[in-house]
Length: 420
Image (cartoon, rainbow, N blue to C red; front, top):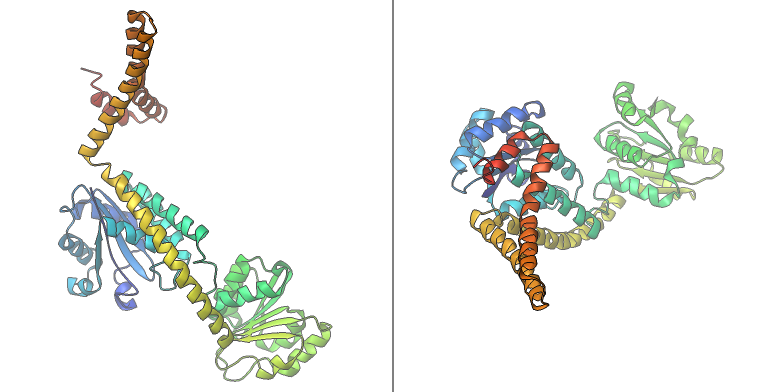
């Protein structure tokens, strides 16, 4: 039995190459079936994200899956020359392939170390392969073990606990400043990618209410629908500033949109209840002098970057612990996989049967020494040994019958030579 992980990612290929080898989710089932027949693998799964595309393959023998077959299939499927693919491709087999999959699921191979989204994408790849019928025992067990490792890493290390994006850092700071963010009212200024990410984080943290201010309402309305926010124009900011407990701004304006005077008037209406403000824009959206006001906590993008740098260092330390967990779990999975080899399975089964025999034989000898009738001892030994040996096959037949798995019943009858 052999496992292969092959693909490209943000480290090996620019986006211009990655987008050519990405897979359309709607056509993934067809691609998986193609791989089973054309790459000559027994099981297959595909992980396709903006930062990576990876194929996970299982074959009966390591010589069944070759780089030539995989590259030829990618070349044909995506209609791109092999010369475009080869320089960016990496190839891992067996233990290295298992280790790679587990590292990916834990965020140890991500663009942002420890990011959690990749685990959800791995789970989606698993579900798609299941639905396509391209997954069997080995791949299923590998994905399940991989999910377990990722959960263990999240639970036992600090790899995902520190903010490493300005959007996440801004929301994290707000959570530390406010006792209950669920009651806070937020004003977001801008509707670009950064503010959209901030809005998403706030929504996930069940913030009280969000208002989005933008130059053009159409763009803001599209984003606002996703998080249940209200929309206003930039000109309406002074009227809404007093209601905001949190103000986060990120626009492309060349001049500040929020001045010291505007904030002073808002504070007077708020009766000097504090305001948390984050300026993620360069050039600044919020006048520098606003930080002089007593009831304002103003952070700039530089302030957040220093927090992020420290958090990244924390994640790097946690990654060392995570790698140790992954290595241990990789070894455990490979031990299980080796147990599937025919010789090992026969040896294990014989050992199990002989252990049962020896246990019952020892009990029988003790009974004979206690002057129990030999005929009764032999009869009891035969009955108990027969029951022990029948137990597992009987359970398997009953389970298959309950599940309506007729093909499995036929297989078991053949293995147990019932019809002979």
